[in-house]
Each structure stands twice: as C-alpha cells, then as structure tokens.
Image (cartoon, rainbow, N blue to C red; front, side, top):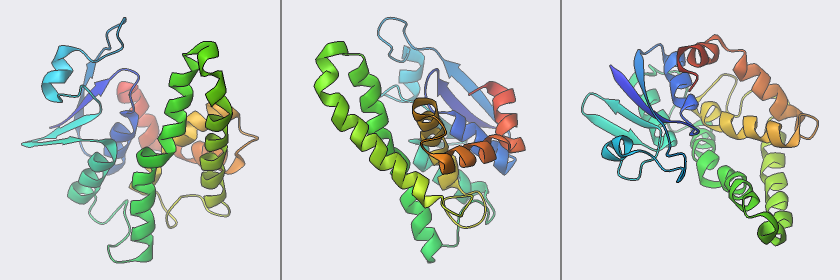
Length: 203
C-alpha cells in the first residue's frame, strides 16, 4: 500500500486528496514537530534526511517534493486523467502551474510567515513582501477569469498543487480581494474526494 509520511503543519493534504481522486488506497504515517525547534523528529529524518514532508513510499519507490509526487501519482495511476496529453499546449500550461506553486507562489507566503516572526525588525521588508503577494495572487486570480480550473475544463494535478496557495491567500487577504480564487476554493473543497481526504486523516 502507498504510504504518505506527513509532518504536522506541512502541506500533505494535497497528496492525500490526489490519492482520493485517483481511488488508490494509502496509509498516512504522521510525525510531530519538536515543540521548541519546530524541526522534524528523528523518525522522519530517517525517511528523508532533510526532515521534510510529504514523502511518498510506493513499493520500492521513495518520492519527495509535492510536485514530483503528484507527477508520479498521475503518471502511475491516472490512466489518462488529471493531466493533459503530452505534446499539447495544455500540457505545457499544466507543467508550468504544477511547478509554479512551490517554485514561485509559495516564496512570498513563506517570507510573510517568517518575517512576521521578527516583529519590528522585519518591518522594513513588509511592503516588498505584500507587493509580491499581491503580484502573485493577482496573477492567479486573473488566470481563473471565466474558467473553473487552471488548465482545461476539469481538475488536474496542477489544481491540486495550487490549492494550498489559494486557501492560504483567502485566509490572509479575504475573498473580496481575489474572488476567482474564492470560487476555485469553494469548488475544490466541495469535491467528494477532497472531503474524503479530510475525513480520512485531516492531513
């Protein structure tokens, strides 16, 4: 059975949701961060030396990085679903958004989180961070004009990968700022597979 190694306060939900969409059985193995250092415990470090999550184990395969995990799952178990056909313009768009989520969109979100912990010392960085957030979230919101999903007319792995960015954006900025992202989040969170993933593990 597929194993998902999950660290609390990490972004594993996308992977359990993808597995529910695919209809593949899986087991979630959970780890807790050290309350003082916020680092992963030695048990997860033994699975992934960097102590990052999610990590997928499928038979003899160990896959890290959520974008690579989603690519692997869609390729192995998708049966033509959740990704456009290779060699098409939609496939190029799919790959761009799949990797944009962690490659670019998460950076200003993480900077806001970490710089916010600096208190007054981080104040000079706040305007630049907010500008970058508005830039990226505005871009994503515009990409959803007159469409439900980021690629084509149905859910793909790129939507799954971008879901965390959209959800965090709404919590921070509110729905009025990014109405298309709000509509997207409502759509994905209403999916039965998404709700099963929450009920299964909360991850």
